[in-house]
Length: 252
Ligand code: 13P
Image 1 (tube, rainbow, N blue to C red):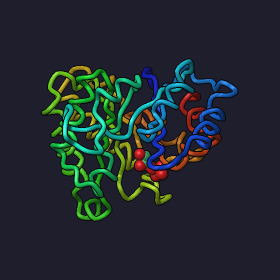
Image 2: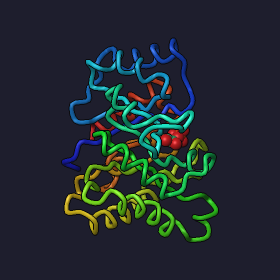
Image 3: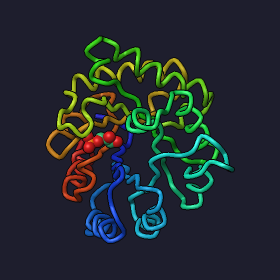
């Protein structure tokens, strides 16, 4: 049992188009889901931020971006700045998703700079950390996630308590292979201890689990003492599944 409001965030990744997005958001919001004890959000592709804002603005569903530039403005073709995200009133932005780290070469220092840019514009960064299968099998999970988080903690200083942190084991993303609640909790406890060492407000920081979270495994993951929500990929594209995860959080 936790006093904290849990947070369920959908990460659409590079999926969706105008008509499908309208259908998906409509199905999530009508009829209005019971969510007085849960915060919920969707992180949408940048071109659809205006659409998400328009559809979600009077609802309990927040919207966010999936990435933000480490630079403030200028000659960075294709990048989206924190100020641009702020124009669309986003509440959250993902930083350091493993797909960005893996396919776009984002280092932990770049991720830290991105988190800082978001905070400077009043946007909550959802800092993603997680080990690959190879790293887990080599016994490096603790080192890897601690190093990833340490870079951000060092950069943001006293703003640490404004972060959301998501533990997403890379081997569990999109694979249908979820971390067991015990495996996830063990890493969340490490991350909590690391945050505790950085701020007195660590107990209020929300630590999300991500990686094949779905309607049937959400309740047992969310029941863990240091799991304060979920970062949901595939299942967030299916309104019934996303709502079932929100309902599992609401029922805790
Ligand atoms: P899946 O839920 O599709 O495994 O994706 C998890 C994820 O990467 C969310 O950011």
